[in-house]
Image (cartoon, rainbow over all chains, first blue to last red; front, side):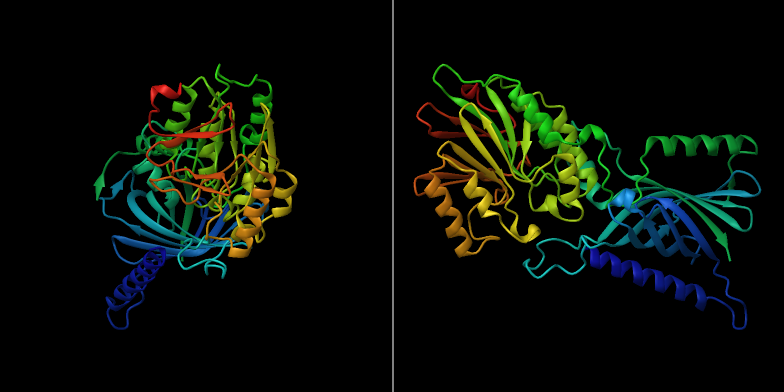
Length: 190
Length: 274
């Protein structure tokens, strides 16, 4: 399932990117806005950097690398991430320079650690466990354009393992650890 | 594009929204965090201390009772309901969780289980399951609960809490088992002695130890779904408890003849066990 979503994410990113580029008039400059991105938390690293692009008015994506120190994760973990943001809701301008755009998103997180695996170790029968190094989040966020160059991301990410207890098995149980994690990000237009 | 609010009220609104958003949610760096809050550390020792501070509950017929719960992963509400229900029974000495408190060995899953465990008035003692040991789960389990193999001596019985997750640890410590069993022992481990992780030779070794030591019984999780499994080998009772989903658990009574009786419960338990 996760591999399917990963493939879907990659294909959608590439297709939107391609569509965006093909839409340009011959000889004109590439109009897709690209951004450098820094962010924290949201299960994607204590600190993370990436490259982001608004491929259309309703689809934006980012790819990057996060880092979490051993004080947090037991051993230093580098993780890749792939974010997909779908901006289906209307934008709202708060002032001339600030525009808020709510979005729904789906992200993939790829971890590196001795204790995590993509390929099931040989002692297991097929599909005994899903890959432990691969996780998904469901994202609810707000993109804020701050002037011409900057935009901020404020996002609540719900980890895949949190969804079944929250949706199907939550009655009578209020967890001490609140569901999800907040991501704070800043994008700079290149 | 709509102009929702004019500056500066817009700034106030957005800062307020951000503050509420951030304060209402946690900020996790990674799915694979391992830092266990102090309140949830060393739970095995804390609950053993609580158990040993109490006098054993034995009824007039000499019955000794405890509860078992298996595989509560992914269903924290059902786990809580089962533990709450067991707490309503005043004859239960303690609760054994027979592994797999988590699906993916992740900290937040462990915390859901720990939250239920620390709220229980009846002491709760655990063994590690195979799912608990993946990702960084071994480190979290050790921090949160303590040793992977340990013994409970209580009311004249011995409970051997044994980690036998062969795939995740690479070895099953039969030597520990051999050194910690006697004729008053009940073994509690996640994986039952059936063809699963262990090969025929290992199963033979395991069953021979149980037979030689003449244990009272052997309790397990891992293979229970909606149904439980009971069988006897060499006159020793073996029991795999049903998975907790649906608020399932079981009440185990050792009678004065040292026979084991098991009452399976879903949500509520019948009155007669009280």
